[in-house]
Image (cartoon, rainbow over all chains, first blue to last red; front, side, top):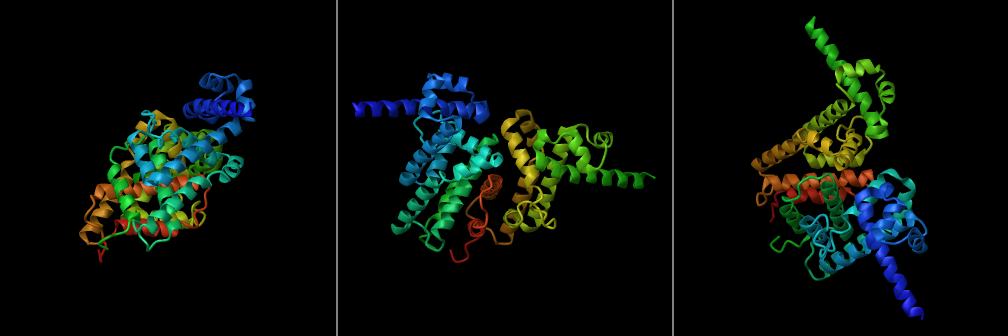
Length: 197
Length: 197
């Protein structure tokens, strides 16, 4: 029964990713011990490392999973909407907001990128999805006439990613975010076509 | 000779701040041991802690000193220029670029804000200078007609600070910065008055 078996594998993999997400977010990479990962996922270390070679591979799979889900939101609603979701529910408490669940993972990725050169090279190969989704969304917006056409799409993509990075850092440092909605309005407006321009 | 004595104290204080800046940037707060601070400043621990109560006070004085110097650049040239300086010489190697020397301290401040609640409350009282300098500069720009007048100055200030935070984070993670000049052009343009708008 290969189909059932594959479904089962997928479900188990999902269980591990979802359980370990909260664990890495709360304890950081080093603090997410195998014992804590067992508790968080409800599975034994044998079961966890049957699906993922080691903790590093599990963390990278998680970060990749989050990046895919963010890329989906970006494709449908744009990167500014991802930022708005993050503002409205930074710690993903509502559960229904897909944009914000990844903050913990993202912070841990940021931290390791700063401190771990080997991780940086492994991550570089996997971090292109979000950029690609953002760029593709902007291209579609330009074709439908909603995007300003005097600035290169690559520049607009880098701009939005830089603001996202600032927002992630702002939240990570515990600064208040309740006054940032008009800032995101300004960001959104600066990539839009100025109809009366 | 109180004047000479005061000059001497100031010079010694400056020597300690400048020496320890590189030490904190290289080793991080925890890694900047008293022995390393002695080596970096060329002074004994007795001399160092005659001027600063403890390592925490030294680090806060350093961060405050950097914030003052950044605020001076902001007052004269604006926050976007601070960001351009950072791009052109992120690690302050040219020495002559005042905007960039603070990156190491700033990164360490960011890290401690994320991980140390007590530091966060001590820092909050000291971090207003840059915001105040940015706001004041924008107000002057508005009075001289260079700033857009359809968005509140506080929103523009938060916007520029958010982009700066993104840039600091971007550089901290070792991402390439050579394509960000046109992004900063876009940021600058988004706060300017649109003359043909």
